Amino acid sequence: MVRIRLRRTGAKGQPSYRIVAADKESPRDGRFLEILGYYNPRTDPSTIHVKEDRIYHWMKNGAQLTESVEKIFQSIGLLERFERFKKGENLEVLLKESAEAIAARAPKKSK
Image 1 (cartoon, one colour):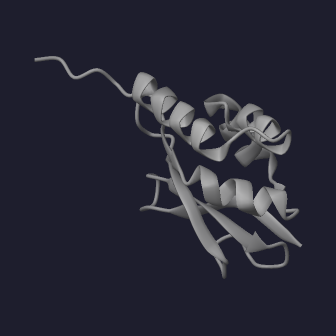
Image 2 (spheres, one colour):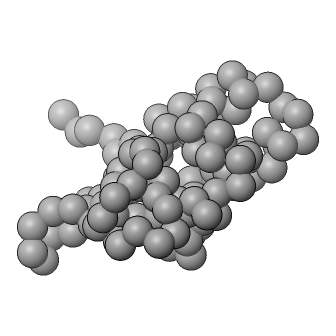
């Protein structure tokens, strides 16, 4: 069974994570099938970058989310878009909406 979960990277005391598709039996930082994005909780706001089309592919084929990944996806609205994808909404429309949401969440640079 495939799970979408976090894989820890970064130095001691400075965690950042990759979001990966991995076999359920693999260790946390062990073998994985594909890198689907990354998550850095140390920035303000947290940096989250995902390949939504690949996540939809894995979820459509039965991959399960861990609790922590589910919370991250909930915070960026990915789970709602996936429900709409399952109901037949066009993938390009959803990816465009995702890009707009990411642009709105990005921190504003002051001059």
